[in-house]
Length: 261
Image (tube, helix red, strand yellow):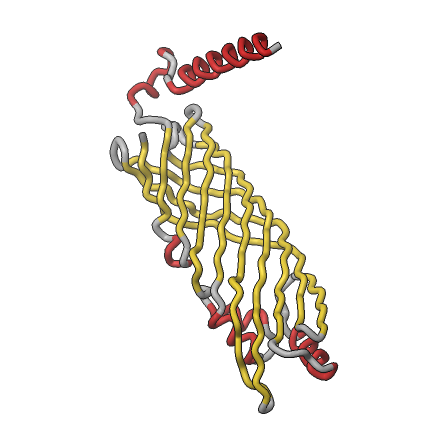
C-alpha cells in the first residue's frame, strides 16, 4: 500500500509541475501576447493611507479578456477617520460617553477581496476598461481600552471592546493602463458592495452598577442609532453589551501603482 501511494504521489507531483510549466508559458500560437509583459501584476493602493489603511492587490492575467485578482487591506491600530461625521451619524443627541469613546478608542481592520475581471477593450491582456464582480470579507475590531468620564458629579470608568464581521459582494468598474513594460496605473472608478454584518460592543464597569445605573446605561445605549442595524441590548451589574446585525455596504475607489512581471 505504501509503495502504491508513493507512486501515486510521484505521478501527481510530476503532473502538477508539468501543468504549471504549461500555464506559465504562452503557446506559440498566442500571437501578440508573446510581445507583452508578464501575466502577474502586483499593485500598491496609493489612496488607501488617506483612510489610515494599506492595501495591495495581485492580479493574474489568464487570457486577452479575463484575469483573476485578490486584494488585501489592513489598518494598523488607529483612531477612526472622519470621527465627527461618525458621531453625528450614530447619535440622536450629544452623549459624552459616546463622544469620548469615538475620539479615543483605537480600531484595527483587515479585509480580503477576490475578484474576476473582464476586460472590454480591444487591447486586453490586463489593459483598458474592465468590469469585475467581487466578494469581500472584512473584520473590524475595537481594541480594549478604558474610557473615564464624569456624569452628574459621579466618576465612571468603563473597559470597552468590540468587533464586527462583514460579508459583502459587488461589481467594480475600472480601467488599467501600462506606462511602460513594467509600470502602470489601475483606477478603481467605483464599486458598490452590499451584504450583511454582525458584531457586538461590550463595556465592563469599574464598579457594580445599581438598578438605577443599569436603567440609565440602557437608556443611553438606546440613544445610539446605528443606521439600518438591529440592536439587542443587555445590561447587568457588570456593564452592558450591544449585539448588532444588519445590512452592510461600502464603496471601492482608489488609484493603484502597478508592477508587472
